[in-house]
Image (cartoon, rainbow, N blue to C red):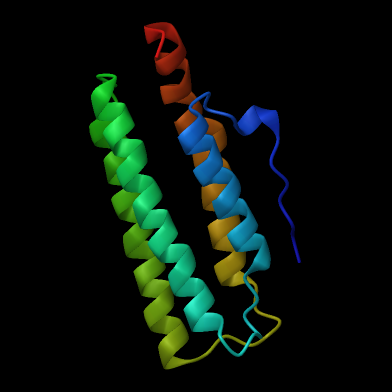
Length: 129
């Protein structure tokens, strides 16, 4: 199973948001579909992600980030996709060897932090925030 490590390349130079990203990485690393409390763990990841999105969007609004609407749309799309996977899991629990959920979470989070979040990080630095 893939384990992701935080790197400085992921930093957005906003301590609170970097802390959120590190926590999300750890939570996803710890997510185990074979655990008896998988749904509880998964819901904790989703709750934390929702809080993170709120904090991130508030930061983007505060600094006048011009890409806020698009960024928010990506967050909403992520939430919709995860909700669909959660429904699917409830209807037909994934096999222990099925890594679709964790792979999706990883690829989305990594791509989002390394590409999309780096765009606002550059804006944040340019604004001196």
